[in-house]
Image 1 (cartoon, helix red, strand yellow):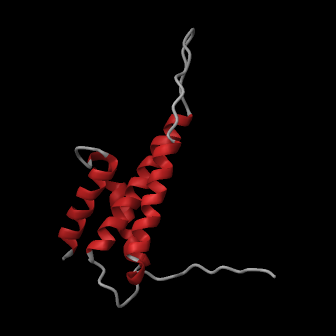
Image 2: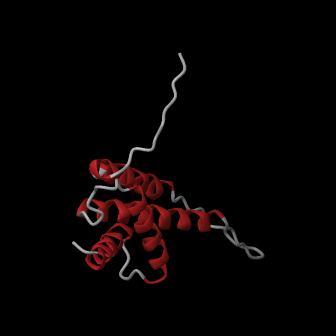
Length: 120
């Protein structure tokens, strides 16, 4: 797979996860997710492996869901109106699980930069 097909596949997967018809105004989110995933790759890894497409798309979906949740946290009210409660926590939690799952699937291609210190 090359960079162009990697980008296209990631965009299609993002549309699937986000339940959108077009990438449109989310293009920057998808591009940033791809850049982040590429930066996490090991030097000797195939930077265009299909598993990385899934991980990048899940990451873009998470970023998009975070933006949607943040927008829902502020709801304008008008005189005499009652704001409608909106709870995006379920979709956000599911998006986080997708990122963890797909990062795990692509783990052999990614650097492990996590350092855990445990005190005894």
